[in-house]
Image (cartoon, rainbow over all chains, first blue to last red; front, side):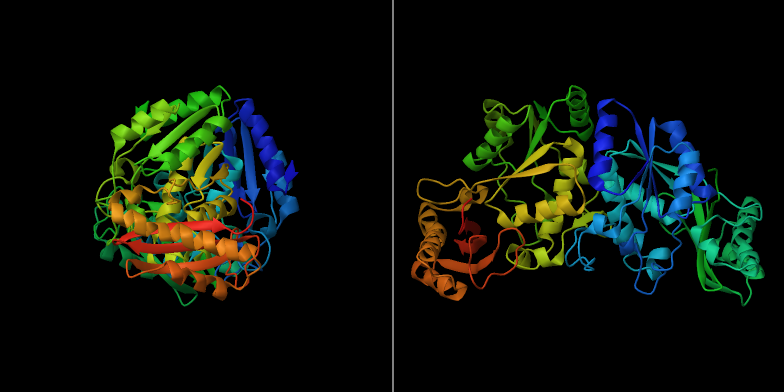
Length: 286
Length: 286
């Protein structure tokens, strides 16, 4: 069932709650791929009812980012959701979520602001305000759907850490479930933004996964110095790659790790054909 | 019943929810007076179960403000609550609400930030960060107690407008009920901070209510120009009064009103004996 209005979905949620059913939310920006489907599958296993939200959230895009050209494929998304047993696809318009007017600023809207320590690094360094926008929309969706569980991909590692922190800090009554990265056979991490890449660009993009795998292999061989591990990346980079960051941080707290350990996550952001791609790997067990 | 732990109160809430009972929350900083009791009474009339939170919220006090000396009278508060049929008094320690360490800053904690337009005026102008702290703790309490209704006094007019805005912007599933200002027979608006005043100070403090009543009387006689109305205040002010602001704004949107109308609220903040007092009056019907 496709719903666009907050009041409509709240009515459905109310009925489910009365029946004592557990609810899972998979928040997405649409353009669904096998990564999203793995979240939906996990939600189906965990909960009685599953809601997928499809909302390209304007307030998490910077003015120079790809909000307008971000892929929108609602018809296909709805079909995929139906095939995978999703109970409700919630696809509100920006106006339904943020009200009238283009004034989507913190001058006129209440924002949820994750801590500077979690934000002023990695993707947050270049995407100023991005995680404020993410936390604000995620909290709105959690308040609308009131799920018992919400499902996020490890692909956006900083995002899921920040969302977990928000849930803890604000006592949001939901359990966040993190699901592993899904990759193409080639090793490329699935992303809706892969659609922007040419075939050649897709090949160049494999460098991200290769760099991470090689770092993990070196770590397993006993190299723990992050500077030394970081240097192994250059073997995979060419003039086709515009590296934004390659960082070693604690997978729970985002604290920098000069010496890598089993709780370290290695994160990379790199532009290929001017498409911003991210990927990451846990050095310990998932 | 007095509870200090989040997990304890959540257990109780869960049972009530299962029984289909409606829940009312009256968030307070303790030092309960007849103003709070009017909120409790309203909550009792509206809901099956009533929770009163008693928490002097450190993150809404500025470094130069009265956090340490703010009156704490938990035993008396609990007794009053019991006498007035409150089901749970929730009085957590700061550590229970914000975790370890004194680092209660937005460097390390997720904050709820109300819009600048609502904050950069009236009390927010001098109390920088105050309403971020208020919204953050109110949202935490709402998430913990999950009430159907939450009760706020009109006394803190800017606060209740900002809380309503937060609830709307973040789709928080609660209805905010605003209750009228309760006054001593003398006309002094009840406030926990009145305890700081000497008997003489209390007399000087009556100026606030007199100024507001006189402005309303002038408005009823047809004077709508806010500059003219504001000037009537000086007749009541002496060197005992340190006026911080006397403003005319829309009672829903906080927009300035140069010409007063029936939707205008007049707000005053004034120090007497260095105690910061606030009061307000609706020019139209309550």
